[in-house]
Image (cartoon, rainbow, N blue to C red; front, side, top):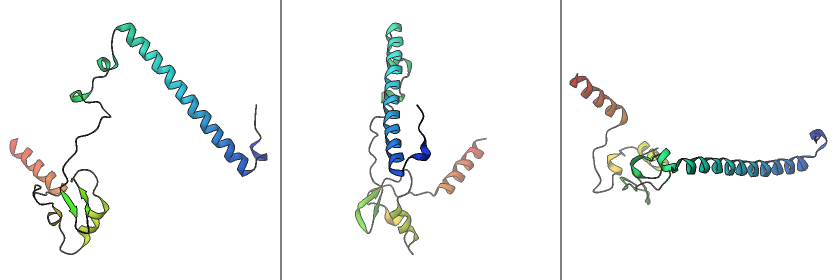
Length: 134
């Protein structure tokens, strides 16, 4: 069965796309189900579990919840916005640092570690320590 796409209206093409995407999703789910059944059969035949074949680090599941990290910085304009200091800097943090007189240290939450080392300086310190050890 072939469809002449040139003769279809934009609405018909959109409906065809949605139908094809739904069919693709269904086919993918069936494929995953079949592969999973084959893997389960192989594991059962060998007397193993998926955890035996693919152990996780530290006994934690790979996609399990991550440990919460205490916030280190607080937005002075909106106290509900905080950042742990890990990952990409939030926009409010970047914007606050652009203001005159505002430093990362000034955004620290009381009681959080105050030592803030910019990434370039930290890399230089690590390189210097390695050079001293040699």
